[in-house]
Length: 465
Image (tube, rainbow, N blue to C red):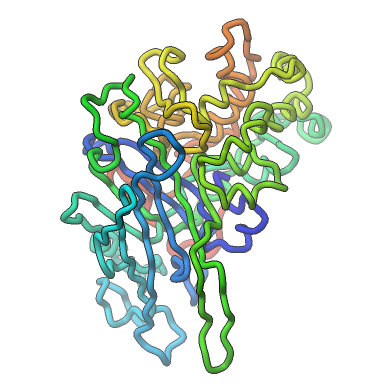
């Protein structure tokens, strides 16, 4: 979760694993949208001497659909190359790294940024440097300065950064995957009634772990299709966003003389739109296939959205707590509310002052209505909490997407499409019990928004929150 090791094959390829995606109207610059795609999840900060990095053999892309067909109209492509300064040293650095040109830094990474719009590619920047990993106070004594040096404002209007950040996703993985235990409700679990007498204290399993982030801030004029106006109810205001990673189809392992080589066309091995879609909705037998497909093919998976397995598990795991949900499941009615939230966007008229539909094509994309202004007082429950600028209207870094998703699956959003349905009382209260306060590295108020990565010296191993 949100998409960390979510499928059998991509779990073996962390460098290409899309772990989180964020898309939101930038609070300080509401004429722009900020897109952040995370890769290389579950990084132990002390993981040297070969510290984490992007893959030189992976094509990373952030896609934007602005006409609702589930295909990209605008793509930002990141391609990386790595250089070793001292061929005779095993060390990542031989002294403090105080600038991106430091001679003490032995393994540096650069990237080319390409914008593809309407089938035409334009290289926006060559050989932009990434910052190093946050090794420790002796090696990277002024890490924030390195991040500033690695943040670029391009002549085409974009702001861009690629490098290590603190993982800002908060989730109690250890409990959730122990037969669906939610620690605040553990004493009600069917298998936990004898084991647990009281509520448990949630644990953020991803705290003090790092990721690698691609962050780009883009003028709205470069992601929306041209239209006469961009009001909340206007279809042109809403964009769909997803990220992907691709590898060339053929890899030939080298020998003592030659290095490994790759050949052939690129093929997609990972993607991510809505948080938790592949993780929780798609069955294990189809997860790897889902990762290879474009969103325009997601009608294949609509049945799993209409009747999600987790909705059937909740009444079984917590007997007597989700009676109304149990009755809804037994009625076999398809979950039109979840189809709207995850596959088509929410049409006008269901939530006052809100819509983010992209049309009839069923596609897993993070939908963002760019006409909705950033909230001055963000609510971590997003639209469910009355904050129309939050998930599922895009996704901000502090949005509690696990709780939002759980409450929606538990039936809280069914009345949007069926006024006769009464959600169980637990549907509005179910939660893993975590928030942004359980992330040790604080989020930033501005670009690139995710917190300073944890250093290896101060965090030799991940700690419980």
